[in-house]
Image (cartoon, rainbow, N blue to C red; front, side):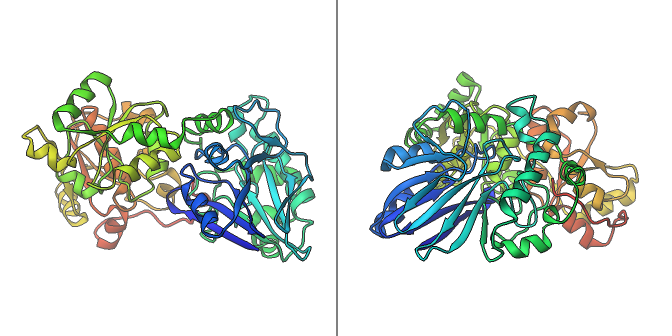
Length: 473
C-alpha cells in the first residue's frame, strides 16, 4: 500500500494518492489532473475512485476532469445537492475497496453539511489513516460559516454545533495511532489558526488541538466563531463550480494561451474591459508596468489573493507574466475558478516597453527613508494593509489599518490628494494594494519595501506593545 500527500503551498492544500494492488484512489485532487494520471501510469495502477471530502470553497477540484479522463468514479458523502456530473453519493459508513485496502465514508457535517472523512483500513485489516478534509486540521477545525452562503438556515452557530457532534461522536472515538491527513495547513482561509504541520496522529491531536478538549457544546460554538472574518468573495462561486461542473482544464489553457502582441493586447483591453493582471514580483513591477494593470505576484499566495481581489470568477483576464511562466499563471488562475484568461502579453512587459508604449511606475522606499520622512513630518500617513489580527498584534503607532482584504469596502475612506506610505508584512500585499489604488486614480501611494518586518528591524519607529494574535484570519 502507498499513501502520498501532494501538497500545494500556494493554496495550503493537500491532495492524496492511495495505491494498493494495481488500483489507486485520489482524494481532493487539484484542477490540473495529469500529474495524478501520470503517477498511476508509472506505477502500473488504474485510478478507480476520486473521493471528495466536501464541496470545496477555496479551490476548484479536479474531480470532474479526472473522472472523464480515467473512467474513475467520483464519490461524495451524503448530500442532496443536484450534481452536474455522474457521481456516487455514498451513505454514512459505506465502504469502497481499492486493491487490498478499504476506504470507509464517515459523514461529519459541520464545516459543511456534506463534509465527510475517509477512514483507511490497510491490507492487514488495521485502521491506518483518516483523511479529514476540512473537518479536522492539525491544531484547528474547519470554519462553520461557509454554508451560510448556500442556505440562510445554516447559521454558523448551527454548523458549529454539528461539528461539535461530528468530532466527538465520529472522530474522537477512533484509535489514537491513526494518522490524520487534512485538506489544508497554515495559510488557508478555511480555518482560523492551523499548524504548519500537514499530518499528525489522532492521539496527539486529542491532546493538543483546542477543539478536541473537554468542553460543552456552547463553549465550543463560542470558541469556534470567535475571531471569524468574512470569507473571500470567490468561495461561493467555487462551491457552485464544484457542484455543477466546469470547463475542461484543457479548454481553459487553450483559451488563455493566446500570445498577443502589444498592439493586440492593447486593443483587446479596450474591446473587452478585461483586467490586466501582472504576475511579476512586487519590486520588479514597481519599476515599470502597463498603466492600469494590477500586480499579484505569482511567487506569493497568488491564487488566494486573485480570489480575494477579483470578485467575479467569470471576469476576463489578460496576463502579463515573465516569459515562460504564462501556462503556470493560467493554470493557477483555474485552480480557483478563474477560467476566463483570454490571452497574455507576448514578450511580457519588456515587449510592451520596447514597442514604445506608455509605462507607469510606483515609488518604493526603504524603512530608513520612511523614518527620515516621518522625522520631518510627524503627521505622515502610514497605511498598514495587513489583516486586522496582524495590526492588533503590533503596529506603528499612529498608523491607519486598511486591510487589503477589504480594499473595495474601505476605498472611500482614502483621499486621492493625500500621500500614503503603504506597507504590509513583507511587501507582497502592499504592492497589490498600491497597484489597485493607482489604477483607480490614487497616484500618491508610496510602497514601503520590506514591509513591517523592515520597519521593526530598523528600530526607528515607535510600535505598540506586542499582543499574541488569537486568529490568523
